[in-house]
Length: 341
Ligand code: KG4
Ligand code: ZN
View 1: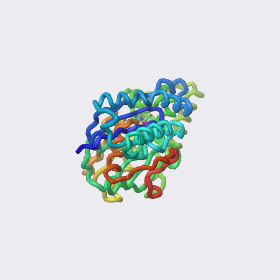
View 2: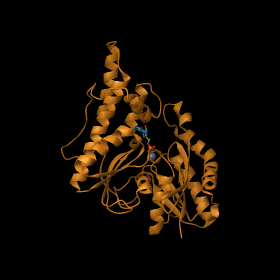
View 3: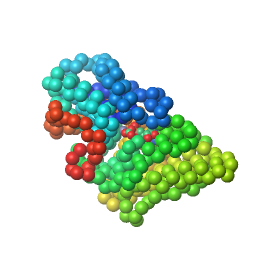
View 4: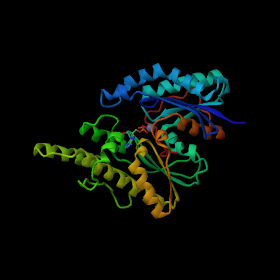
């Protein structure tokens, strides 16, 4: 018998619900973005985000079920993001998921948002060969995770300061491009020259699998400030292209260094920054050279969505990992550092 899971995601500024069958068939994937509202403020305003989730969540779930052609009674489990993310925003999804799971008397499945991003890969490639090196690059995280089997995460490196997506957003803001920055930087970078300006890459200690992007961020800001002081014209496309290359160079080098160190033949990319076409191409080129397989989700499954949460939930369902109804939001939840998810 097939298993239909309702996924719910409200950790940041997307109110999302999806129905996924057996972890692979997407029956519906509804995402109501609040981006336009937060754009006015140049970033996500937590209190506004939770209020909007509250307004939108029931409608988004109703549409997800309608599109899937299923009634509540045909749902076998409810998967929800319980962290990391904004506390108030997470609570809206968690309270809704609890009510539905309790009402239907089906398991409640608690999914780590980062685990969800990784599982977006299992939607299109359900038989990925373990062990895997996973690079998670989103607005809040830049992490390397070694995965030896389903549900097992070993943290092997991460950012010491800013996340890659956060720096994309910041540089877009100083270039006055708007929010969210990643897609806008990518867009203008296509008109620019990657080698136009040299920005520093932080590799840290020789054997380090950690990242640091704050130096790069400061270097770009200083470059813009100095040019302004000297009344020099800058070419935003060149700045964007050179900055983007600096980020991608480090992400590629560290990820393949991790694959070599752990003798892993398959690399999995996850998180919003993976929607970047230049990043995808660079990973593929390096993968061909090193005879390593690189997998990444379709762009719509890279950024926040609930299908990835339902997919991660499916494997928990198979393992019988039911969450208690006392489940609380875990805004600072990590992946793989303390043996828990
Ligand atoms: O995974 P995600 O949707 O939300 C979080 O969990 O944070 O990631 C959002 C981040 C933002 O920082 C956004 O600027 C970045 O992903 N992003 C991109 C692209 N699309 C989204 N960064 C670079 N290039 C893109 N095309
Ligand atoms: Zn995310």
